[in-house]
Image 1 (cartoon, rainbow, N blue to C red):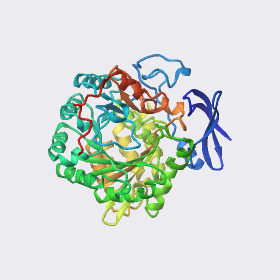
Image 2 (tube, rainbow, N blue to C red; image 1 turned 180 degrees about the vertical axis):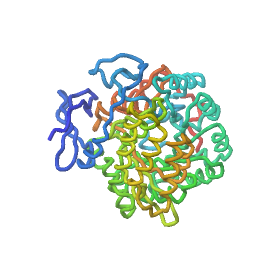
Image 3 (cartoon, helix red, strand yellow; image 1 turned 60 degrees about the vertical axis):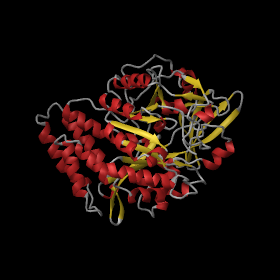
Image 4 (cartoon, rainbow, N blue to C red; image 1 turned 120 degrees about the vertical axis):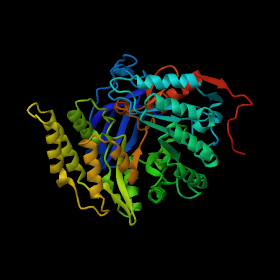
Length: 496
């Protein structure tokens, strides 16, 4: 059964091909035929019921008002930077600070040793990229993540973070393997004081078999706890290698809730020299991951508790209707990721779904936005307060005893416009999410056009994540263009 038509890629030559998303045996597949390499059928989502539930949250954005170029539809995804075919604004921007690294992971494609050259933009080039992101319309990019390679290999990292803070980024993240952060506690302190919001810590498991750096990771968390530096654990999930530990990773995060804000699982994307057999054996889709989480948490975090990113758009509509100010909307594709929250108490995890009826909550929020937008509404404050009172029906009796806390924070944020309350929520709850980036085997151009995670490049472009790292692989083009040869004096790594 054909669900929709789109465009995909040939896994062999990368050619753009007409593609169909089909349902078969309770799963979702992407099929296409290359004139040179024949027919391909690859798994897209492993659960058609979950696929359809997420599909209900589809919401197309209006894109960027100042796109970098005009492009014809047939040029996607080879015409990037962001063009007028793109449907979403930048929610999170990535900037690669270097391709130097102090590890040599077998699955990594982003390091100097593998590339054979050094890519490391100058401080001035990085500032230019940051300014470009803040000039994006209708909304400046609110968040930036410094990536690589390993960002801590740069001596000017603290100054880069300070500059991002001065330019107005509300969220500043850094992706790191943690080695230098474990060894250098002062660096953790300096980064926190410079304005770093979150460390995205590579964390593939809780045992040495799945995570050889487990002791280093624990030291990073200890150092971050001392200075109040937030951490998000980022596991790359590979079927048959570490997928049996996803529940234990969540438990580890809950045990360290004072510093660990969440877990962002990233099912492996086959961007290197993977074979069809590798893909079949090691593929993990979002429904697969949700199944494992439910099973390995003893049914506490159920598969049905996960929602796609666009589910929170009604909140943007409500705030915009109440304040009269346009709000940024999370219009990423509904099949790119999923998330939920859980409170942590002495007895373990209590999902937010046991505190509120999530579907009813979002319905009420959308209805309130509609009432506030009604020209007949004379007093928006009274309308909002009355709407919040009527929202009690979406609350459930909380096993954690924190439904009152949740309600208080919601009231403070929506009625009093005190958004610091939402920060309190984030510190008292554990975010559990996943983002499944694409590769040539499951590439869907429609998803690319709705991407909200963009890379900034030294030549002034914004490039969607899955176009930068797979498909056309703009990463390699950009890095080579701004590279220099490896010199014997270049410190590629810091390990003995």
